[in-house]
Length: 324
Ligand SMILES: [Zn+2]
Image (cartoon, rainbow, N blue to C red):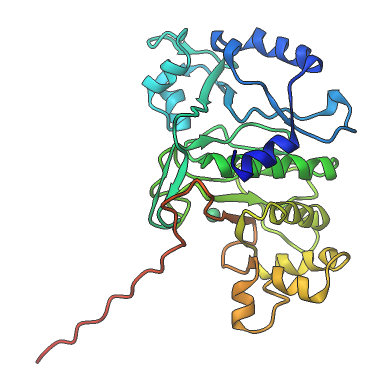
């Protein structure tokens, strides 16, 4: 059993007698395949009342169609081939339309398929991409062909977001942006996001953000305490390589970090605190341009990512001297 799975198992409580009601409700609205799904994984603390406990199923992603539309259109929403969708949902009629609100299985974990990040985040691809599930701690767009990552990243991120929300129950859910395509590859306009290790996450805002876009952080619209809580939770996984966060945003987070961290610890986390080029480069939070409305989280290569490498720098083309 890998370290990740051991950690997941230690955090999760598999469905027992107390989950019966929730499972019965699920099976009423789900299609026929629901019966043989793996148990719903529930990362929560024992002290949280059952009714308030979040449910995350990392093994199967069920989804409600947002509107009445052809099956092919719905397949496009997830970047999944129509044939694969029909295999997952054998009761669907390929020529019929999917009704608004109809529950469709869009992803099921196959233990025989390896899920791994191949190559560099800005050059590589994703094998065995896992779909990111719905959850109470985050919101996602209804157009989701770029919501895949390695199974390890999906697990770490979903558990981190859920654990964060338990610690900050009054914080608004974060807006989850783009991850990777099902098989990775180029994701315009991003340079990276190609190998299932990158994810964009909106900062925690004081007001709920119902729009499609991230909201730029100002001096007073970000819930800095909850945002620092989320970053702290992500860093605690030891699976995060770096997080791109604008200088101005980091500056708002530092006072909350200073409550529990020494100056040295802060310098290892915040590039705005670190002094000197090397120290800034080594800090977990890096001030990369364009991250004043969202953070970009890059996860490390995991034990299952056999051919995973660091980001590659673009080679500068040497100017050819013209011979006269
Ligand atoms: Zn990004």
